[in-house]
Image (cartoon, rainbow, N blue to C red; front, side, top):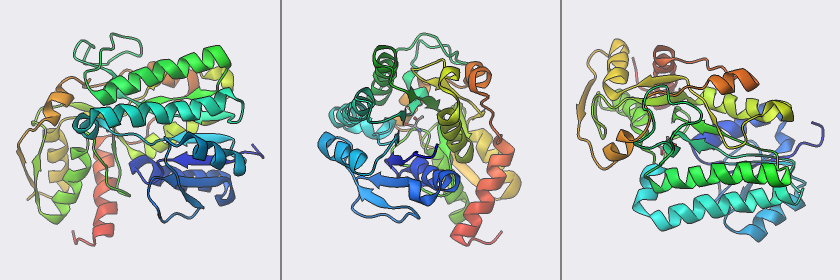
Length: 317
Ligand code: AKB
């Protein structure tokens, strides 16, 4: 623990923003470095501009700063990667290899890399999707995450790389805006509800998807990195789950707080992506192996999102 030095790559994203804060609270500000492709960003810890595809620069940053652990979050998400498949594949795979290879060389002691429910496809059982099941993803993002999972397991089995991973569901947080995901509606809806009183959803009313509040996602990320090596039995990626809802369900929960809020539906290309994803996830193995537990369900998440966003947006109740 005492020599732990952490580098977060992709720190300006939805998960990174909150993860950096939690890691700094837990390990101390002097042990965490935030990095992203942007030239500048505002964090309570040192920040570096870093392109994860630039292997030499990544190595230099890791070695010069005595980094022992990397949380590698930089990726193109499902909707954005469909607009630019070649770049989506390149960023998602090259980035992972530049980190895994530092693990293989023994320079990094531990690596976190997130996978996603996007690994699942139309032939996967849609409800309570098991850990091990048919996996035939149909998006570039899903294919890259599935390939990444296989590579993580390979690097662990072949070279003993301590890489740990969870399959994030749709993530909902109030501290930053999401970028390029199919589940992003579940964040936008809160902003529009408070600012406009209405929301036009790009998915249909009954499109149920697995979702999680950001504080739970950050907790899962830090928890799996803390458990003893032998307790991490799955080295591809663990299913984790918290709640499952569709746009109509979250809208009616918001209406309990904002009775005049209205929702309409105009599905776009993201509907086809969502149609091939699970509605709910079975995460029994994460719960059994390393004690994963979520705290937020739909009502408590909606309550907390509205409270926090209201303060942030300075919208009166
Ligand atoms: C997306 O919608 O692309 C992401 C994900 C489910 O990984 N939020």
